[in-house]
Structure formats: structure tokens, C-alpha cells
Length: 399
Image 1 (cartoon, helix red, strand yellow):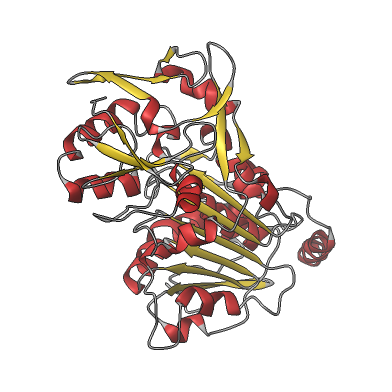
Image 2: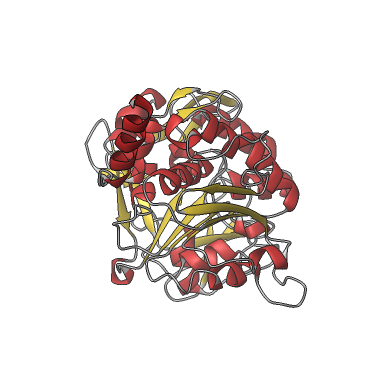
């Protein structure tokens, strides 16, 4: 009788509607980080990366946005946000879900390094997915079945995988590393998005570190959005502003002295203030005329990296080590600044320069270096395109 009673209890518990919670609320309540996939194991805290809250909440089932575009620097928590979306979809809003990585090898790494620990360390997910070592084929490296849906992990180099089944939730990770044309069938991004057409309430989460100006898929998508930048308050004057590399200052040859110069009052801000600054930040659209309920875009560089992660001192050191080497500088621009790289000799149209260079209110032009392009810090003569499209020169100085 007890066994029957327990089964009946579970049945009625299954009929009970789940709480209406967001992705970030789900992560804070149910997510535990494994030391296998995170440098900070234990209970997940959105407060550690508060800039991800709004991004994750746009992925919630009751939010109206259908496409969320995230241009990001490396190692700021973007993929963890995507993992939270996966856990939320398995537990709160089950549906067919696809997680696309650039290659099959990266799919295996994702599955073993992130998704398996996500399931293993969350009892609510563990009871919904069969053990990986069981004879049940519903849990493999590339597919995880759960009540009401499944998770497919696919490489962008596999046309067959991208054509597999209708999908409601689609995660396109590191899209700038995808092939531009897949076996003559077109863009893998377009092939994957086509899988969502039968679901009017679909979610598409596209995130990537950008690469080459004019070839970057994530930049192309971002330019079609309202282009949100994270504004944080100055601890001295309180004025909200985005963090830009041009305002990171340090004494000549002393990157350990790196501080941020307020764009309003000019006071230098020590990095210890970043905890409070991030906690009180907010996303502000640079293109409010593009705001709509279907598509939203976010941009974040490494200056926002939480205190104790990638420090301002390390950013200064990385720049000093890279500034004389175009190959290293390209990596710095892409992975630290979260910006596309303009190849040698390119001069871009003024209108496009204004919207891709930096958040509004910082400067009204984009600097185009004779050899490379990196805002104000290159120790060379630089030129910039202003409103009248005339080429001006800016004095050479070091940060």
C-alpha cells in the first residue's frame, strides 16, 4: 500500500504547475557548479556575474524575446549562462533543444565537461535523465533525453546533425568559428535556425567572441539589434557609463597600477570597487530605435570580468605584451575587448564605424590605425573617420 501511495503522490506532484521563475532564478535555486567545469565550485550565484541576469532572463519561457545575441569577450561566463538555459529547459520548460558547437570535438568537450556535470550536480535534472553508463540509449555524448524533450549537441561542421529534428530552443555557441558554407548547403547558422520554424515560441541564443570585421557572424547579427552595453556607476560621482579600454590607465611600465578613469569626473577608480559597480549596473541600448520584443543584443568586454577573475592589471599586461605584434594584438582585440579586428589597410564606412567601435558617449569616431586598429592606446600615429568622412590624425601616446 505504501508503494502505491508513493506512486499516486508522485503522479499528483507531476500535475502541479511549476513555479513561474526565470532562468537566473532557476540557476540560483538549483544549479551547483562542479570543479570539473568551473574555477568556483558550489552553489551558482548570479550575483557573481550580475551582467548575465538580464541575458539569461530573456531566455525564460515567458519572456517575449525570440532571438538573443551576445557579443562577448572570452571567459566572462557566457557558456555558463547557456548551460543554465539548458538546465532550465530540462526542468521548467521541457522542449526539444539543440546546442551547436563549432566542431564535433568541441561537442564532446561540452558534453563531458559541462552538460554531464550540470546534470550530475543537480538532483532535479539527475532524476530526469538516465545515467550515462546505463543501457538506456537516451543518454549519450550527443543526446540527452528527458520527459517532454531532448537535448541534442551538434557540431556546426555536420549538415546532417543540423537537419535532424524540429527544435524549440537553439543555442549557437561561438558562431564566428562556424564554416561560412557547409557542404554547399549554406550557412550552418541558417540551417540550424530553420529547425525552429515550427515553434512560434522558440528561443535562439547566439553568442560568440567576434573575429574579423566584415566576416564576423556575431557582429552582423548584433548590428541588427538595439545594441545593449552594460553601464555601471562611478563610485566617486555616481554617473552611469560603459567600461571601455581607452579609459584604463596605468603608469608607464607598471601595469600593476592599472585603474579606470571615470569618463565624467576624471577620477581614477580602483578595481576593488568593481563588485559594487557591477551589482548596480544596467543594460542600456545604444540603438533605442531598434528596440523590439523579438530580438535583443548585448555586448560585453573583459573589463567587466568579476573581481578575482581577469583583472585590469592582467588586461594591461596582455596589451603591453601584444601591442607590437599584430597577431597577438588581434587576439587581444577579439578575446579581451570583444571587438572585431580590422585587417591592415581597411577603412570602414563612417556609419558602420560609429556603431561598432564603442558605446555611445565615449567618442564619435573610430580609430583606424595604419597597421592595426585599437582605439587610443597604440604607440603609433593613427587616423580616424569623423562625421564628415575626412581622415584626421591623432597624436601618438602610450597608456
